[in-house]
Length: 437
Ligand SMILES: *[C@@H]1O[C@H](CO)[C@@H](O)[C@H](O)[C@H]1NC(C)=O
Ligand SMILES: *[C@@H]1O[C@H](CO)[C@@H](O)[C@H](O)[C@H]1NC(C)=O
Ligand SMILES: *[C@@H]1O[C@H](CO)[C@@H](O)[C@H](O)[C@H]1NC(C)=O
Image (cartoon, rainbow, N blue to C red; front, side, top):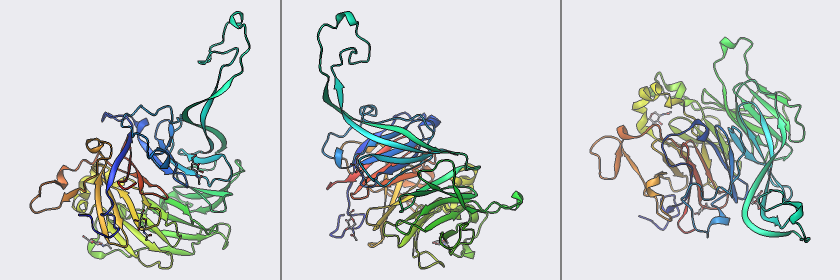
């Protein structure tokens, strides 16, 4: 029941668009690996594991009043493909009319220029519209080519390649607020790059032990502070987050703050270390807080308090008793990401069975929603879902044992200004929006 408040349960999320193939037979190449709005939310970039990187003029402002499409191929023309394996995408802050983004695969980072075209020249003298050359003998009059409107097309062209700096798989890239540098992190090292210089980077963190057998911890994610250009954080497989200050020394092996929650001895098990590994870390827009995602929870940390998180939200606590089978089927190693809404009041992250969760920080409310083809009719409102955790199962509830662990939502993104979200299931991208929008 919608109240007068403003909590996440009071927003009615409704379906807007879905992209991707319908069939359940997922090719590795089609697995969505990242979703990222540009800084004002008009463009949404997604990457996948095998091939193309598609930049969709997002369901955001531009598309709001257009008929919403549920046909997976209908706006192919408007989207763009790059034959690349993509692990992460980050938009650069816009400096002039052109837009740029960074993408990375396992080892190599690329800078792309993104441009949009909605007109095309027509009426060439020597060429047909489809590009074939005309027989010169048939050309008897001279035409003046004209620009005609066409469907919006987005083009990407590679501008720079930053290679040969990582031995292990890159897990994060993050653009600095100075707009001149960015960082890239792999399992053991973090490098700092100048956006203009491709053949040189500075190693700012190196946790590789001289003897690899002593390795007990790897870097899992890293991000620059949104407005202090000297500060960045990185998280680890042991559940710690280190904050580093580049003013202190060139090599930030000595962190300036370390955030870690002491383990509750009652909860210790064989799986404790695995489930405390942090899969994502994100600063709030304000820069006051950061959010981390581990296997079972989302935690909000105040940068001024290292000893424990200020808020902890359970994402799917009912899985605690299922860790053994989740270990056997490797799901326990899934890397769920998390995101903030535009004003840091709500956080969102994914779960299994194509469920995703929102936690309203002020109203202390949470909701579970589902991305599925069943409710992908235009403007249909998403019904909150509930997982039955013992006792008698009520109508509309789903039991823990019937959750589908092959359907998982690892990547989500929240429009920076509006209640518009992008939710990636394995090979489908869903856009949902506030019914009021
Ligand atoms: C996001 O993309 C839109 C559409 O190309 C563009 O107009 C806008 O300036 C971009 N926003 C930023 C902050 O780069
Ligand atoms: C220990 O487990 C309980 C539920 O079983 C959970 O509520 C609590 O947050 C856990 N403690 C820590 C420190 O993770
Ligand atoms: C944050 O934004 C949402 C809409 O996205 C709005 O409903 C809410 O009132 C805002 N909260 C604050 C604290 O400004």
